[in-house]
Image (cartoon, rainbow, N blue to C red; front, top):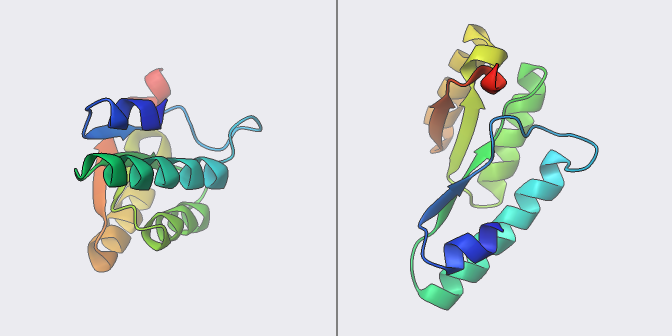
Length: 113
């Protein structure tokens, strides 16, 4: 759906705040799939496209690993659910993002609870 939305005219799409790394959709597979969709839609439209990749994880090490992966894939935008991640995780990810040229979107839905 990500490719279809971007190819169809949207400039940005985003992960749902509930999507972390469930057995049916592992985070690394999702990041790779989305990166492919972005690059393909950009090549076909000549437009800049983006996606908010959810880097929220169970601990700060996992969260930073996800941010690093996004950066390595050339994806400049990540997202963090700060209410479930916590204040320290939010500050850690904000510092990492600033130091590595990533745009950080802070989501406040607390997994829609």
